[in-house]
Amino acid sequence: MRLALPVLTLPVLALPVLAMCLAASPAVAAPKVIASVVPVYGIVSAVMGETGQPELLLSGTMSEHRATFTPQQIAGMGKADVVFIIGQGLEAKLSQISGSEAVNGKRFVELSSAPGITTHPVREGGAWEAHDHGHDHDHDHGHDHGHGEAAEGVLSFDPHVWLDPANAKAMAAAVAAELAKADPANAAAYTANAENFARSLDALSDEIAADLAPVKTVPYVVFHDAYQYFEKRFGLAAAGSISDVSAAAPSAKRLREVRRKIADVKAACVFREPQFDSKVVQTVIEGTGAREGTLDPIGAGITPGPGAYQQLLKDLSKNLKACLTG
Image (cartoon, rainbow, N blue to C red; front, side, top):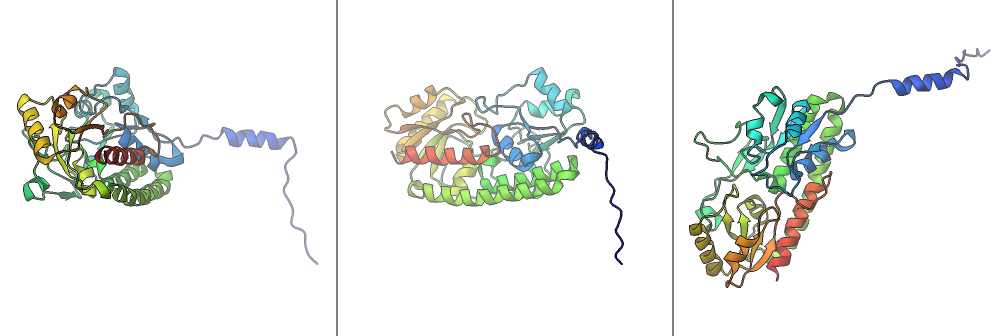
């Protein structure tokens, strides 16, 4: 004889009450995260996925080198669980704010110091020789080198590390590790999202390499020395920059040097940036035959979101190819 097991039932009127109680149970809030610039926002947003979204400090319309921050932004950083920045002096004012009382005790994570980041030395002068005079000084950083600045205040490496997609993959892994500390319940999701992001960059890198292959040997000049990570990753023929790595105003001597370089190598294009006045570019190309193009290292026209970093790379590739092919 089979015994019937008792079945527990709730009165019909109790079911809505139970549902209300379950709905009222507090969910684990996503960590409050801030990203300094659009490329960092794109990486962090991709890693956070559906768990939440970071806040963006600087839209791409303002130079990362010259940006200042409002009292409201500073107060917001003080309330964040994690603030992701490039560091190495790139966001100049943040190096001061990160040690101030306004944000005391908050985590400022410098992604230029992430394990696995490859760095290149700062190039000097407006007209570079091929391969930095034949010397390769690249470094693979698996350790923390603080703010990355030499004691005398000179940059110890070029801070535009995000423009190498291999570095962006390392940055995503570091973001996932930091978010896991702030939000252990979603650690597995952050890791999986970072891995998916890395796979998307592998495919995109192959596409960009194929797109730029026809123009790899065409010389060009950029507005400021922000692109060597992209240039070296894809083997491009950049010949010089009007301004240096910090986007400082160029001297008359440097402008003469760049004009000579444009003529010597028969540069096809000189690229301006939307964050800066284009008059200086028009000045150096006058009478040279070089065309004017536009490159943007931080994404002035890109809508912030999980695909922002990939869009940044696509725009660089598209604009380079369009101008260099004439």
